[in-house]
Length: 73
Image (cartoon, rainbow, N blue to C red; front, side, top):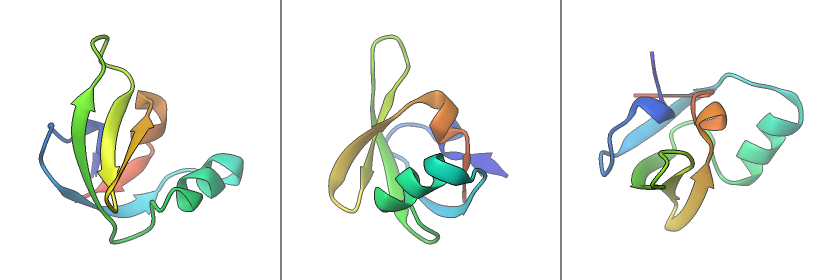
């Protein structure tokens, strides 16, 4: 299964599962990252981490360690 971190820029994908729990899962859910949500990676920082993602019309930056916990198709 691919993770959000593996998706190339400007290619939309859909959230399938969060592979975390506790406060991090709560934070991701509060940001609107729930099953069947469309997410598009749009910008990478010059160093490659974090990456900005468009989620429900809003740009949200996620670090590699967080993005790699989100399974997508």
